[in-house]
Image (tube, rainbow, N blue to C red; front, side, top):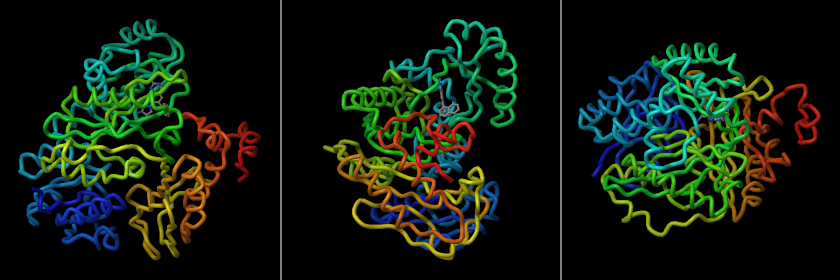
Amino acid sequence: MIKKILIANRGEIALRIIRACKELGIATVAVYSEADSDSLHVRFADEVVKIGPGPSNQSYLNIPRIISAAEITNADAIHPGYGFLAENAQFAEICESCDIKFIGPSSDMIANMGDKAFAKARMKQAKVPTIPGSDGILQSISDALKIADQIGYPVILKATAGGGGRGMRVVREPKELERAFVTASNEAESAFSNPRLYMEKFFEHPRHIEVQIMGDHYGNVVALGERECSIQRKHQKLIEESPSPAVDDKLRTKLSNAAVQGASGVNYESAGTIEFLLDENGKYYFMEMNTRIQVEHPVTEAVYGIDLLKHQILLAAGERIDNMMKDFKMRGHAIECRINAEDPDKNFRPCPGKIESFHVPGGPGVRVDTHAYAQYVIPPFYDSLIAKVITNGKDRSEAIGRMRRALEEFIIEGIFTTIAFHQRVLQNESFIKGEFDTKFIEKYFLNRPENEKQGEKNGNTK
Ligand code: MV4
């Protein structure tokens, strides 16, 4: 059994992990940077270790300091949360060799799924539908031209070491391909020290839908429904919901079976996510697998009435799926709005600083995950997520109504936030109808002059 967990993270997710540990009777160790002394994860942990200055590479990304903190405090496991070291195969491997349980899949699994072309090949082997494209890595520009010719333009070049939208180039005609190949490859080399690319047919208006899966150490995998993640800006998700308005029971069964088949096929254990692209005709294709607990996990928790963090920890301790996750059923609808310390009128520029007043919404069907409070100072070194508001209700319309009401109650003074922006999205007719794709925010809410008419019609009057 796991007795003490070190949380190698900060912010709301560190607090979320501490909460799960407390309910399981597991002791907690928080690590923190000099910029985070006043953060709530430091206040609520049983033990704390200061690991370095504010910048992440000297603190939350500093592997030796985190491992030392685990050894000093005798922690028997590390939870990496999301971001930072959560999908760093080398970190997981070091934990393994130090006999510290990394709460997540094996380092080999992280490395394999982190290689996007390889992950895709494994899913194809497991008979999960994949997007037409190259079989693995593109060997040369002439190879790329030949494959693009076969699948037809437009195509997209993706860095195999990328993911989450980094290192991609859309190519619409053969004459653009060489340049795109060279720039994408150079970008991938400097960002990930790996220039290798693969190619796919490019879909213009896809939805991004992901399936939550949980796997135990004995080969059992379950799927916990889908999350609709199409409402995003520059690959940063803004709103997620479950179920997806585009997924009916029949499609859900197909997506879930595909996700279980894929995850079982690679012998996946721990919490994970299979990302699918859903096209305009309702066809779905594997895109990427994420080997971590995700920011948006609460919408799945809300519709299933379960605690994914607790289950992830229990799975790491060797618990069996069938002992703990029997008879769960999706019920109602849940939505999450990510509240960022950003100014939507200034291109979502981050605005760290002091929160003067802070009042959190409540009432039926409302959950707020946050590490912030009145007088808290948001440090400039990290991402700008300050709170997640999750509402649920008997159906989508009740969940949306509750979200509007909750955001009205949410008072944050002293900094700019994305709350008002969310309120505008929640009033948009297409959003309300559930008719949107990954281009939605660009289409209605980014201040492009040609959008002005459409924008006004949809309440975008700022
Ligand atoms: C695509 C795609 C269209 N066709 N792949 C974005 C995140 C990463 N997981 C993969 N992504 C996409 N992959 C094919 N074959 C559209 C996206 C995509 C996107 C691409 C470029 C610019 C913005 C985008 C926003 C959402 C999804």
